Each structure stands twice: as structure tokens, then as C-alpha cells.
Image 1 (spheres, rainbow, N blue to C red):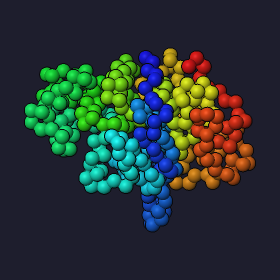
Image 2: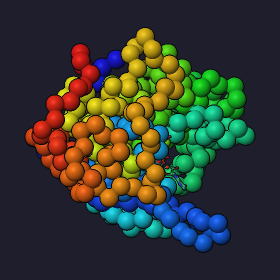
Image 3: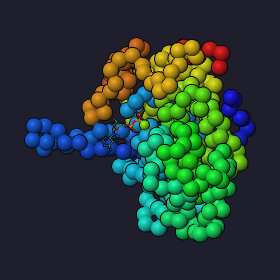
Image 4: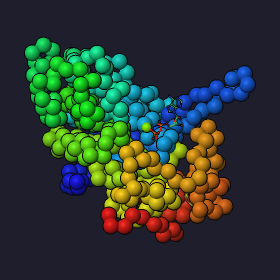
Length: 346
Ligand SMILES: Nc1ncnc2c1ncn2[C@@H]1O[C@H](COP(=O)(O)OP(=O)(O)OP(=O)(O)O)[C@@H](O)[C@H]1O
Ligand code: SF4
Ligand SMILES: [Mg+2]
């Protein structure tokens, strides 16, 4: 399967713009639990996503991918920063939306979740599950609702006779198709897919990825595609953003990032990508060394404790995300000096 090129228009204004986004979770600490520390799950993220683009987001477990996706979809209220979405001739200050405006935004930004087993209500039929967002948002009811749901489930590769069945009678792949239909039925502009194929057998993963690409073309969708598996992200993404400890460390076009990474953490992640023969379902990305403590990050570069290229400057001064070359953003003092190893044959 190949990424279908030519869908994005870099000259357009971004559909999504995220500036200095933060999500800190308070946590009690100490014997009497009186001290409050913050888990800095997302800590100063900047991204722009063009209409029709797929931006892949990778990083090892705990790097903040899900939290970022949930803030952008406003399932979480961000601690700080700005999220702007431009669509249908409007510019929305997503981070500030409340009440009715927030409900209206939910139709435009939908999430697809990892686990098709737990994300569907076992007591609701497929018609009820996929129709619920139409009902809740007052978009359709009765016969019209059934027609729209039927059209949608056929689009995702299910059949009309599935409408009155319950989730337990479906396979994992079919359940994920239901989850996708539920997200797409309200005609969103942005879809945040959080590990949409990670719980599925490898043989089913390609079918679901193809379906997501077909729907993207048909409905001109913009995707944020979150995954711990570089092997999946590389096939669907126009560009890839690499997260470490709640921050973006590298963001660039897929092929360049894979073949010529410029951040030491990206290099370490690529070195841990399993070869085709070793690939197993659910294999996690890990780079050597201890994962960071998000309540107590280093003063300088967050990657210092695991970086084999670090210098005194890295200990003292935090690098900022900056443009290196024409279209790659890197947060590393030494980006121009290092020659790092990528994946060959991309
Ligand atoms: N509701 C919460 N309360 C407190 N801490 C949280 C909460 N949600 C996430 N975290 C913490 O924030 C950090 C980032 O979590 P997040 O789920 O965003 O990571 P992730 O990159 O999606 O990881 P994974 O690949 O395992 O899904 C983790 O340390 C996690 O424990
Ligand atoms: S700034 Fe220094 S420690 Fe951080 S990634 Fe670059 S070389 Fe490594
Ligand atoms: Mg996650």
C-alpha cells in the first residue's frame, strides 16, 4: 500500500493551527498527599496541518500523543496555548469554545479510537451506535437518520443487514469499521485517529488503512494519525511529527524524516522499528534508556539523559523547535552538525 500523493495544498492556510499547547495533569505527592506536582503530558506543542493532509504523530508510550489528540478534539480542556481551526469560511478559536459553539465544533472534529471492543456500547445496535451522533446533534432522525446511517455503513464496507445487530457479533475489523462510520456520519472536516489499527491483526490493518484513505479522498478530510508504530504511520502520512516527553522534537515530510532524520530521538526510534520478518501485532516503539519523568524534566534538552550526542550546552539550555532547511522543524542544538542514520530503501 502506498500513500496517495498530491492531496495537500501547502499554499492554502492551515486547517489546524496549534500554538504552544499545554496539558498538565495535577497529581498529589508526599506522605500526606499535600504537595501538587504536574504531569506535563503536552508541554508547548506547535503544529500546523494543511487541508487534506495526513499528519502522523509518533513517539513511544507516554510521550503525550493521545493527550494532544484529545486536546485538539476538545475532549480535554487544554491548560494553555491556542488551537485554531479554519473551515467552511470560518476561523474557530477552538481552545476557547463553550456551550453550543463547542457542540457545533464536535461535528467538525471527530476521533477514532484504538480499541473497537471497548469503544462501542454492547447494548446498542449498529444503527443506534452510528445514528447517535446524528440524533444528539439534531442532524437527522427517523427515516432520514436510518438512510444516512445505511449509506455510511455501506461506505465503510458493512452491509444493510448489519444495522440491527449488536457489536458482539462482529470481528475486530468490523467493529473498527463501525467506529469509523460513527465518526464520519456527521461529515467532519478533521479526524483524529488514535491508534486506529493497533488492536487489529496485521492482515486487517491494511484494509482499515485503505478504507481511511478512501474516505479521506472522498470527503476531503484532514487527518491527525496517531500511532506508536512507525511502520504504520509511514504509509499513511504526508508528514510526521515525533513527540518526546510532551514536546515535538522533529516534524517533517515522511520520506525525508525516515531516510535522513535530524533529531537523535528520531534516529533512536527508527533503529527500533522492527524488520518486516520480526513484526508482531502491538509491537511498541522504544529507544534505549529510561523513559522521562514528566513531573521532573531536565532543565536543558528533555532528551539529554538518553542522548549519545549531548554536550554541556544541551544540559544548560532547552532547544526550541526551529526550521532547519526548507521544511523540517527540529528541536536540537546540534541538528546541522549531526549525520544520523535513517531507514534505507524508503
Ligand atoms: N487523565 C490523566 N491524568 C493524569 N496523567 C495522565 C492522564 N492522561 C495521561 N496522563 C499521563 O500523561 C502522559 C502522556 O500520556 P498519553 O496517554 O498522552 O501518552 P501516549 O503517547 O498516548 O502513550 P501510549 O502510546 O501508551 O498511548 C503519561 O505519562 C500519562 O500517564
Ligand atoms: S539538544 Fe543535545 S541532548 Fe538534545 S537531542 Fe540535541 S544533541 Fe541530544
Ligand atoms: Mg495513546
